[in-house]
Image 1 (spheres, rainbow, N blue to C red):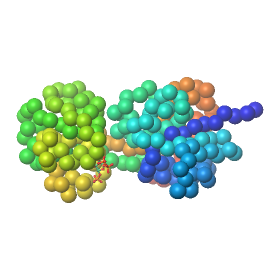
Image 2: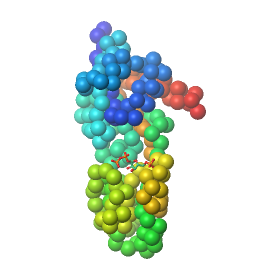
Image 3: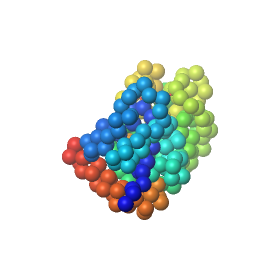
Image 4: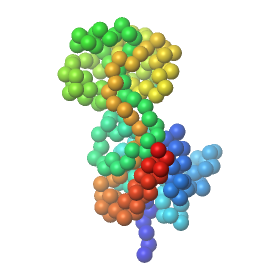
Length: 217
Ligand code: PRP
């Protein structure tokens, strides 16, 4: 019987490296991917009938929803922001951080009194959901693409909604966590059709990985 390829979309960068480390402990390796200087975009393990490609975080759920990849590894922040139709099957436990409302300490009062503040963020959907649906607070959301901590410093916004990992970026810029929205980590997601068509292979993989993750605790 000829098996079809199982395709993985990985988030480029640190998440992809940690994912390959975890997969290798489950016996899934990809020699082609170890060459750091390669310009190739897609990597194959012929024996296992698996393919791997690297994409920008926000594109990973897109590839998986459309079935261009069966499986994706992506941060919970990106999943929440993109709101795609997928199965989230596993918390991989790495890439741990928090989504927070941050700003100068002086913005705390404005937040508390539900003043009409400006919120700068790379995550407008998460920010909107939090302020409108959880806090029932009207705010103005300003979308930025990076270095979000700059916004309150230069007076673009009163607060930001951003990822906090070690807190060192905040600290270096005189900002603090004002409210915590939710914890984050890397997740494994599966295309809804693949889940049915490749059920045995995918279930087997989930089981292997979750056993490894439990043993590591
Ligand atoms: C992320 C995030 C914070 C920082 C948090 O930015 O947006 O700026 O990391 O990490 P820390 O709490 O350990 O300091 P990233 O480096 O991904 O780049 P970006 O500013 O371009 O989004």
